[in-house]
Image (cartoon, rainbow, N blue to C red):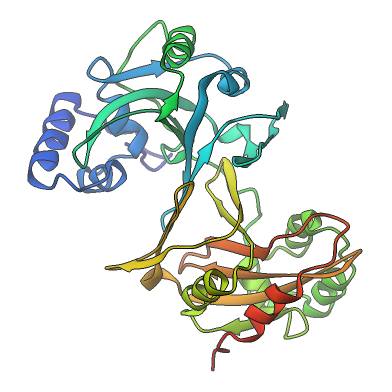
Length: 357
């Protein structure tokens, strides 16, 4: 369990943790591992590690090397999530390029940006979830948060899967892990009145590549949510928190292809293409398409923004959702490639969104 760094961490009671997990599985079989961990007061990585030898194999070695082997598995399901949104995409891992702390997977269906410094713990997991037998590779940050999961499908090469797990199985299958604090890549944000807003606007106006946006935030010691709130309506307009549902339903009806980004600390996962089947179930807004699923906790959205950034082709526009802690929950663009202007039908979808009062 992660504790204050000024005190000694409390040892995890592995038998009690296993018993608690077993009891919760029996009492609430629909509960996901992430929620079980929260109930039991541990990180998800600690919960998974506690089952080493009981359906869980601890992995070791260079996870970049493991990722480079994934094309041998064939079709799998990639899952990346944060506390508010789950992004699931079926396909093959191909065109994998990892250099030092950064990497990319640029396949037809599975499109990832990798930040390898957040890939600290890995496990091969066999479990029963919601009445289904599942096998997966699961990776976690140093503080125990999940960064990425890879699930077998009916089309996965099982012999390749077993060989991969065998190759990266750790020599010591300890059920204990040592967690550590994970530093935020951005410095602590300044108060609103300490931000040089005119300089922020000038820097924003000078952008020519959306990838330079992080450097702009860092230079002005501001968060994404704070920046979009301060920069003004030239670049950001606040819209209703129902905007994501409205946009998805209209995109499905009008067949407007999208790019949907969801990130964990270690991965940004992207869906590019149409969305078709939009469903609401309880607190969840869902896309339930054959190769792509999205699950979004709508009631946890506190701010929604239409954001514009300059590029050589003109402007690119995104719909961005934020949580109360400042997390960017999801970011959506119209489908486009560098060098090609933004789609008019995407801009029309955003123009129809209800503006916030």
